[in-house]
Image (cartoon, rainbow over all chains, first blue to last red; front, side, top):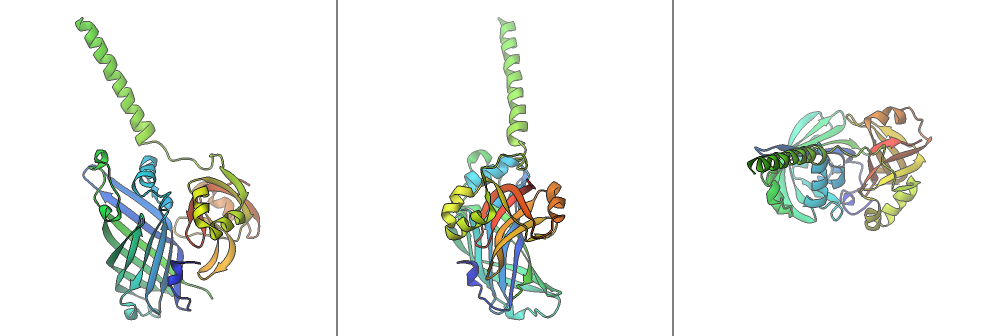
Length: 176
Length: 145
């Protein structure tokens, strides 16, 4: 296993999930559009704070089939750019007590890559330690234009220029 | 003459209305593909698809992403995160646990895989959405046999 997730070092302190959740949400006066992806790979290294996730773009599910088609074919070009990735660090990993249940405010910093374009991002979130598991949550916004996603004029009033991203990963300690 | 113009206008308005209804119901609101009824683009062993993605992800992505695959293999496990049911065929142990093919089942087929004992041979069909460096991901899956 390979380039991206391998950045999280092999250690006994690794938490992973293959069923992370990402939702994105666009709201305009004309309509709200959302999509869900529940097959997100994610890993967190408790020791050094390395945090990664990887998303298959074709796994996003929309309410309307036509929206899903436009998303894949016209906006994110998922045949050409099948994945979105994040690779970064939980900056204050040392403040999280993985042995004690609780909710910890965190700042995650790293590289977000969508449609082949990588941008530095710094976002707030929480990690909740619960009975040996870690639930990571964050909500943040991205500008579509930052990632080269162009919305045609004909539907410009239907799709927001800024998209809200919700991330939730229920990470479990990797069995040796 | 006036009557002809009115008649033509009424016909055009009628055609426009029909076109509008067509666009709304059959294009804008067209239903998602029912992958349980879709014909498979490829019928093969699940391990063969996994190996193709593992050894040459770019080539395999071009070949299989967005295609309907009917894959046969041995069931390793069934996972039920949240409301999902995911059937897993595992072929390797990687740095992040088992790796293989993961099938997100359509709700109406969830019970069918839950009832199957690990180690049983299954053929599952669904939409291949790609490879995430650990697993081949299949969505909207049904049980073929």
